[in-house]
Structure formats: structure tokens, C-alpha cells
Length: 159
Image (cartoon, rainbow, N blue to C red):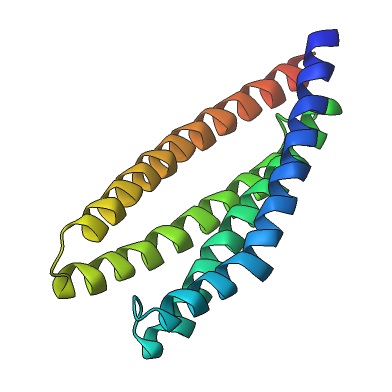
């Protein structure tokens, strides 16, 4: 049980650190970086704000996942992970992953049809593949959580 608490505490510390880094990127780095790239002529002036907003949205999706993982860790710490309460947070994670995937697909298609250099479309395709795998893995984990929750409820009803 001690290693369990240690893992939860360590993960919570890392989640706080990750969230703080994401806020820094969302509020400071990305707006400045896209403005800088527009000034250098690397990004069309008409795309500076759409690119900034979409990137900030993706960071927001990751922040939602981090917050939901925090809530799930709270349920783990209270030995309530196999309850219907956990499904709410898992469903929010699935929604954030779906929203990120849909916008990434849109960006991939927009850039893919206009790109003269294959580098960015290939990187976006890689991110799209990674996000697809993570989303499908989360879908399987949600099904396993539902089965475990049902089994635990059935066992508690018998006892």
C-alpha cells in the first residue's frame, strides 16, 4: 500500500508540474512564438491567430485530461475507482481526446492539401496516428473499467 500512495503522490506532483508548464505555453509561449514566426514571414499573417487559437485549444484539451486524471487519482486514493463516479471523468477524457483528434484532422487536411514540403504534413500525420492510438487505448481502458465496476457491484450485492 505504501508504494501505491507513493505512486499517487508522485503522479500528482508531476501533474501539477505539467499543468503549470501547459499554462505557460498556452498563455505566453505560443502567442509570442506565432507572432515571431509571422514577423519572419514563416506564417501568413492571416493564419497567425487561427494557429494560435487552435494550438491553445489543443493545450486546453490536454489540461482537461490532466484535471480528469487528478480526479481519477483521488478516486484511487479513496478506493472508489471502481464506481460510476469514475466513468464521468473517463468520459470527459474521451471527449477531450475526440475534440483534439477532430481539430487535428482538420489541420492535417488543410495543411496537407496546401503544403509544398512534406515535412509538416508528415509530422501532423504522426501526431494524428499517436492520438488515434491513445484514443483507442482509452476506449479499451474505459470498457475494462466498466467491466470491473460491474463485477465489483455484483460482488458487493452478493456479500
